Length: 209
Image (cartoon, rainbow, N blue to C red; front, side, top):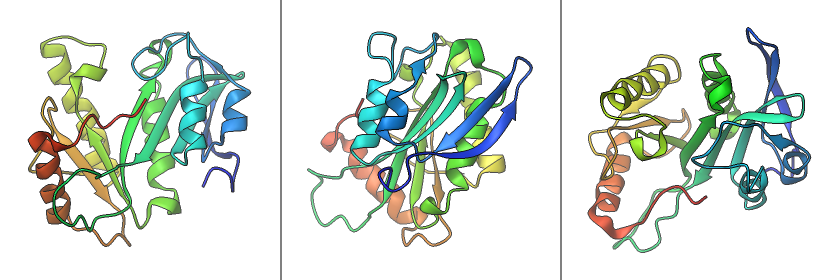
């Protein structure tokens, strides 16, 4: 996918500080020409720079970026989940899990929502499924603060971007929500059944980087 379109500007977001370009379908060569802003640490870090994002794009994952002055200040990676190792016939295809993060210096400016909007509104996902997992292991918060944050990050996708909560979740997650594209063949029931099998410990960690 990324090799066919190196990068596309979805919108220019005006923040209180400056303007930020929200780009989608970003390819590895474009990503490697950028710098990583300070304030990340859970999926990318200053030592690795943008390389984990470039590698994700190289293997065909979907990468959306928020960019200011040559720096990545936020990202969203949607990667196709692997069901290898699950018993029985797995009929589901094109299920993508989302990993996303915004630099601590750039939060509360609408960047995370803009990245999700750019992804959901891409026709590429009309026949696919997007998952968001509420796993506090990947958040820089603690205790009750994580519970409040979980409600916030669940509320935005379900209110505005067509996500629905699933009746099952992986161990350690506070919730799992899914957006089933209008042309996707997968049903909510099929998806819940698949995640139930995964929750039994047959499959490992979702996030590959």
